[in-house]
Image (cartoon, rainbow, N blue to C red; front, side):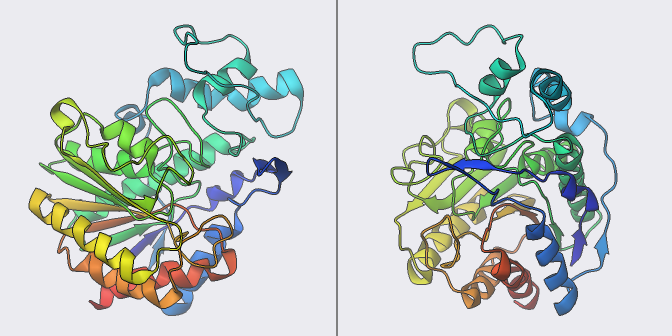
Amino acid sequence: MIVIYSEEHRLQSGRSELNDGQLVPCYEKPERADIVRSRLEAVGIGPILAPEAHGPAPLERVHDAGYLGFLQTAWTEWVAEHGDWDALPLNWVAPGMHRRVVPRSIDGRLGYYSFDAGTPITAGTWRAATAAADSALTGADRLRAGDRSAFALCRPPGHHAGRAFYGGYCFLNNAAIAAQSLRDNGAARVAVLDVDYHHGNGTQEILWERGDVLFVSLHADPADEFPYFSGHADETGAGAGEGFNLNLPLPWGTDWAAYAEALAVAAARIRAFAPDALVVSLGADTYGGDPISRFRLLSEDFLRMGAALAGIGLPTLFVMEGGYAVADLGVNVANVLTGFENA
């Protein structure tokens, strides 16, 4: 399996995030990608290739032009206004407020385009995010070239980023960008399966009215867990997308037995959709040792997950999302890919 990895991921290195009422060191940090790469090399998954540049056009197919412009200039404007420390928003739009005019102030635009205070913009955010998107796009290229599978070791992750918003450590939606690229280059239908612990609210928002890209997500129940306002079972899409959005929320404490049942439901829905390719938003924060999650999967369960994904029988692009038990992250990610390859 080809692995696509960019050293530019290191340029996204935030100093702190707001978590449980405190400013704490960022959970989403460069060591995450480093340890995954090291483990993949150790077990012989590869080769590891740098992504090819794809330019702005694929990003513009998924994201709002004004939002992309904001991401490109936010750091420069923030430093000019406040100095050289992480850019975090101060306030957000609440129900009943008007959102028709984009603020001139960089502080106002941070609140306009973000939905949390855990996703710092830094000096290297734009370069790291575009390198991650290029990694996903290069993986999509490999599928079109005939590869059975590929792994885009994207960092920063992407599934919380919507058409015109960021949050949850995500700026550009790598999985949606890859899915759109597959559609634009010949795939009649594409499925996106999100196995991250947290609901991929950004992917859902982007695909909400699409009938050509199925979105299926297994995640912690948003009644209890971030991102809270997206991911309920009754969210099924709208317009042309009605019925093409399947959420499978699961309770805190979910173990492999319960997770496997939901994964089987997801796989059956994907097979019924009969897509030409599958994009997997691969978060490993379903692991029982993850510091910000509450499922109970074991490292060996990720081998079973990979085998189940292989059983869907589609050309598959894995796109890295979450997973914050850094010491075990490489093992868990490698287990998914090994389980897939050996099935």
